[in-house]
Image 1 (cartoon, rainbow, N blue to C red):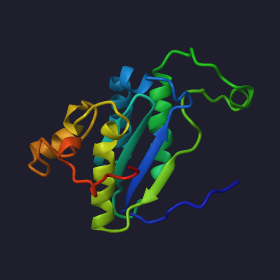
Image 2: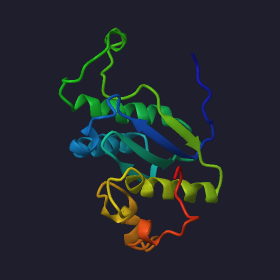
Image 3: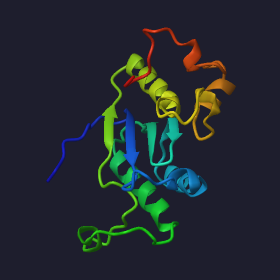
Image 4: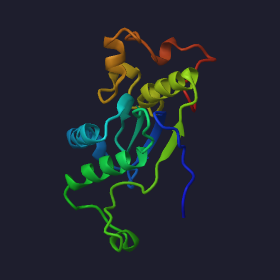
Length: 177
């Protein structure tokens, strides 16, 4: 089955990528391996990393591809497979995956969204940075280590108290709240 995908060369894209085992903490436990895989892919298939948050069982990623390039699928496949090759084979593998020589680490598919404009870009960056608070891992976005929020704060794009639940107005939210 062929899925319809966004096809904008040089576009910005938001992704949610989940582990197959949603109870796992593999992504935070093995973050250095995930980072190494992403850096290797970025070296061979350049992209701009706009925003990222890595949670125990899933990650949110926003990238901008080079002019004339819309091949995010290859990049994501290489990131996932590069990470998987570094992890010992201890996961339970279903027969349907085994017959295709797949690991059982990742969900096969991922959520992707083509960023439409500057407002959409900003909303998705906020969603990414607020996600650890939304999932009750921390009370303040800055307290989650595996997030690009720290580089946004270092660059003066956000303040250290950004996303602090105690400072949100009742009408303010970031995504699904």
